[in-house]
Length: 166
Image 1 (spheres, rainbow, N blue to C red):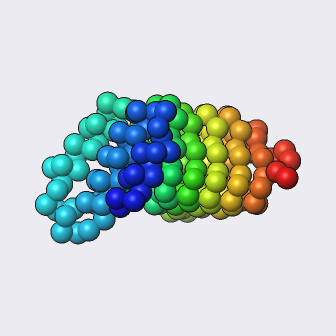
Image 2 (cartoon, rainbow, N blue to C red):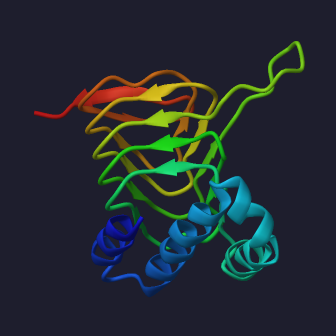
């Protein structure tokens, strides 16, 4: 946990808000991940919800798995589902949603699994149990509902591969 905190701190050196939010996320997700500390620290975990969700306007579920060097730029309006898995060195811009999908039979899918070195543009939506591989750039305003291969640049509604990185 401590390594992740310091790496996030350095990765967000130009964003005080990103530093504070990720520090709170790492500390409170640690408390939330163990049954004993989850019970004891429940009132303190509630403070996380007040600070991050109500004051900062960002919803990062404490059950989400986020790798090191996560960068959060202008996080206002960002929603990250609790079943999301995000790799290392990822960058998320403002007003993005990574969520699950409700199927026709009423069940809910998991949220996306996102690889390493992924950049997600402003106002993008990633919905469903999909896999976004490594070194992907998702353009602003994209709606991603299908798997994305390595080294792709995608954009649009619904997102299509624009080209591949060299």
